[in-house]
Image 1: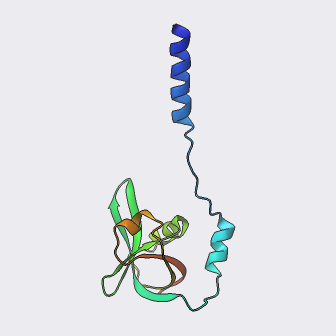
Image 2: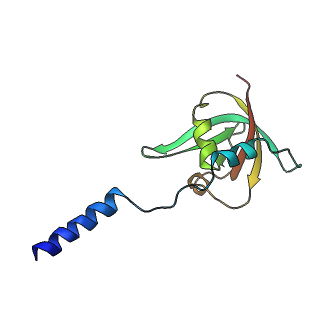
Image 3: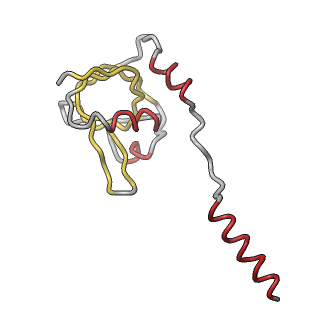
Length: 122
């Protein structure tokens, strides 16, 4: 009986220490390729600011344009880069994403966008 208890504790601790989950499949070489994509006419220019939504530990970044329209950012790697630019006025060149792919797209009504290039205005 004691052996089953020890084995049960072992499995509980092992699966909590080494959780199995899906990792983000986009690696840095794919991100660089996305940043170097040449526009094919589907891109949109947005002038706005990066804003952080939610409360810790469930936060996500979005883009708010000058008209107040809020856009979710995809992929998560781009979102992490843009968090550091919060507070700056930025001109974004983005590709619209047709399907909601990020957590923020469930809440932000402007849709989901994939930032390609951005330039800090001030």
